[in-house]
Image (cartoon, rainbow, N blue to C red; front, side):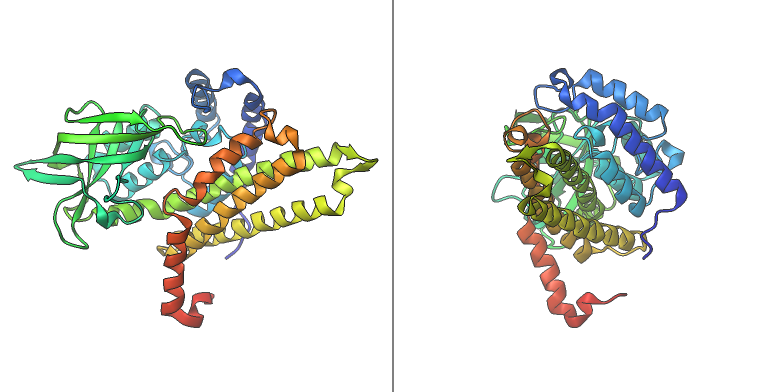
Length: 398
């Protein structure tokens, strides 16, 4: 693969970089920029989203015909990394999880009618969305086949009963994609459905408090007590729920890596700026060998993560599922984000640990990286199985 970006994509990347530097990073220092859950405040968000739209930086991952920028996955990798150098970036550009993955899967597999009703309002920024899959034990986590929530056919409708938790964005979402069990078939027993927040028969039990700053809408516990979903709101065929999940999570997992690399780079930017100016015992911190080792290791790991992510993005653009490539990127970049921000805090000392920089925000946010969209241990199982099956061909250039 060629790592050079085409001129259009690189121009867009530079435009995003300028927007982040001039419009978003300055906001991070103002306490009034934040809501009670440590994300960008809603009115400020609307203002920044309007500016992003005006400058042609909206919904980078969606086709231009429906209001996006038409980037392929390689282009997304470069631009998502740039946009998440600010902690506010993804939601301002309408390229944040879980909307990001929901838009991509609805665009890939939704009918034209479904796209108009369920996708277009998300692309336009008129509504937020959520993906309801994870359940309390003994229900599903990384293994969707363990789903306990049921969908029972009743004429032209489906009736939903069950329990979900840690559903990202649910508190602010209007459009939901729901995964439910429709049979006991091991491979074809799940089906995906769409419902609206105002539909009766379900409730948000609570917004679950978490360690780090939250996406808009938080991480919620949901209960379904007879939610009725018309069959026309079924996504793909009956029994295709696992396929919907795989289609959604493949690219969505990689977009996490893209965004995390932006946060890792920002952590290094803050650290390098500080050590270049700060002196101790008559010597700049940047001139001390121990400091150089810390910076060099973090910089190298970030570049390794970028190469893994870009390779997986390229494979996806070639039509591959890129399962092992996405899993390797997910594991490596999750670790790299934590290492980069931890290094940044260590080098900045008390300043890094305080709220005078976004490093402590990024640090708390980074801990979820090894858990979301499949724990690192699960992803290691995925590519270890590939190694056992492929042998030396695991490292093929093909």
